[in-house]
Image (cartoon, rainbow, N blue to C red; front, side, top):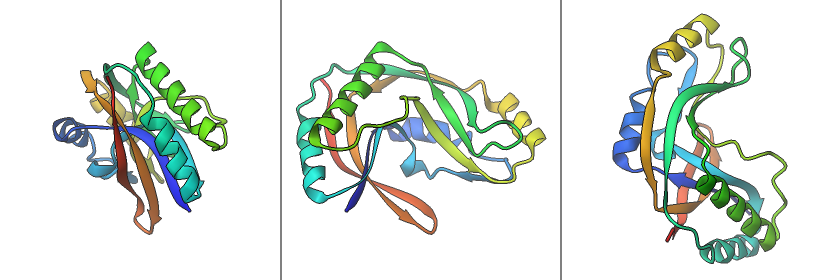
Length: 178
């Protein structure tokens, strides 16, 4: 069995700019720089033969390169019991189309359909016992982050390995756009 997801990774410069946000918040377990990404489709645990079929279907996708805009911070959970802080991604037709095509390719390969609606974001931190006042101060101070014209020229099939320190992501295959 192999645990998979499809996502968009970032170059070193953008990763460094995002990482500058990751400081000064008690109870935050920051996402490792190498693990920062935008998930297009979580797949989960699959057999090796299904993983190979997913790879073939993803390799057959043809979409044009496009640009993303990363902007603002948000939370999963409410301000009093937030469990995840994320960096927002502005929706675009190109991003939504790519996510839908990836989802279709994964399902056609034989994986289960994704029950959750596509919600583009970049996970910055997992939160535990973060004081709500400090969380609000942090968002007020750093929530203005905006990065426009982030070039998306490929997407990636990642393996996710769970460990004591959290998940480790490894790129298995890159699929160029265009």
